[in-house]
Image (cartoon, rainbow over all chains, first blue to last red; front, top):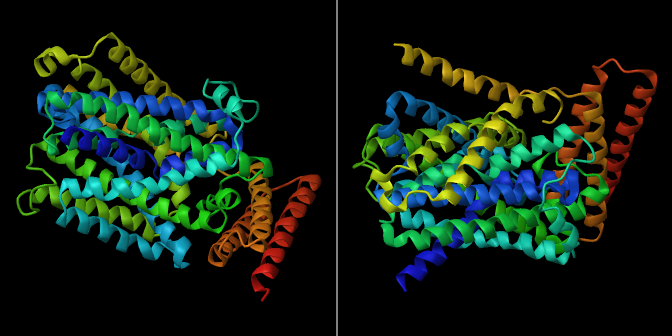
Length: 405
Length: 111
């Protein structure tokens, strides 16, 4: 019975966890500019994230160690600095975007400029981390994240052309603006496959005391949870494709996004959007800053656990405090959240090689994983992801220069 | 020693192109596309507000953002050398956003 509870919680957490400021923005931009055509990129990102989460969860459950911890031990501190710096830099930008997302949600319902909300939002997140436990963080954001299901309701109410949507799940060549099309593909992949997600997931497995007995829970959480989460991102794309694309409305500001919900959901659509943005971005804020503090503490061998009192793991607690404060300052000084999101999603995608390739090596280490090492299917999936991440890294700059961004 | 040098170069070398990727200019075509997108946004917001599909606070927020986009675009297009036809097209596009905003203003101010 306890396992079923863990399973349900894991799936619900993944549903809410998948959607955040980056996936909402990139899916809406993709739908508004290319209709259903980029649905395949969302599917690819969903599968990619599921593969990486399953691998990092299996690694933690079997070895009893986290990804960051093993990365430092097996590759040495000098190599470890590369993924650590990349992870911290891109996650810091994504963290600022998420704080911007929560602040925007508050701006939509109060009319008070988002810059005034950034520090209170960071303080709220910090309070939850300082006073709460890992379960409180996980469960508090999981159930509320289900409000994001309103995107699915909105998509169905718009009567999408299912056949056309099904065909869009296969990659296709763009009919116009190829640079912009491929740039959005990279942004979508960055929004879906964020390294912080599997660093957080692997640390969460240790916080929850996972063992090899949890491998089924791990598989279902990573697979089903991300499938539902990815489905919601596709729902965002569908609504944008049906409401914004025919009117030639592109997303130049977050303020334009809630407008797409006024058609299927009326006045409630804007309020539900604000609620979804608040909850999903707040959940992501807490998860990202924890992932950053986890990576730092695990990499340098400091005591760490969200279940410990801050006095017992002071460097871990100080890390998330500092990260939250400075990320909030980025919004306070007036950086546009949408521009920040777009840049951070591309940078996230481009940083993937330094986190994905080492994971492939660790997942084939029999001294760590015994009989649970990667099979041919998991290895093929990780190799494809690693190659894809290298292509993304190489393509990001030329696409920006040729007018994609 | 060699490995230290490699690491100290690898990090900035990896990040430099990525940071550069974030810096993009704004061409006249891009600005005009944005202006017509904002015009369509304001038209939709006006129609939705009339049918009570969006709250007043949100419609006001959208109007303010659109106005800010209009000012930015006017400044961007004004500072760029454009051919006569392009200048005429830009003026028409900016005027049409201005008119759409006036219409939303009217709806918002209506009792």
